[in-house]
Length: 135
Figure 1 (cartoon, rainbow, N blue to C red):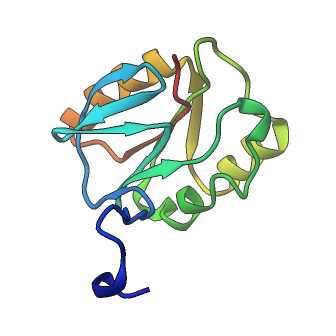
Figure 2: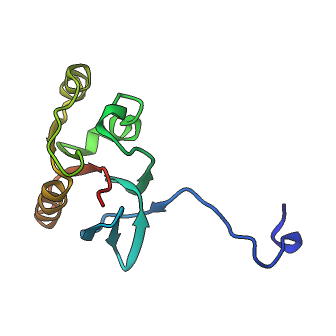
């Protein structure tokens, strides 16, 4: 539908994407704040930008969920995986896939991952983060 023919109350829904790298200012209440914006849900922070990530539980972690990370592996040394309120280990098959891609994947609670991501980002390190939202 063209924008001319849409009702005035219609909303554009786009895939969430911030085209750049930015520190995360806050997390909790089911989302994140960064770059003077907020996002409800999980995030994938990679060199090409910050993307909405529609995962809610570590049981959903598989190579398909991390496809964007694997595509950008040349620019990623460390991947911080925020697994929610508590640390949850990565599945062995996924750990091996990261190892083969040359990425050090480090699971931790989402809070710890956010703090570590900000520090490594400030040091201009080749860091990425996959962060499950927490309430």
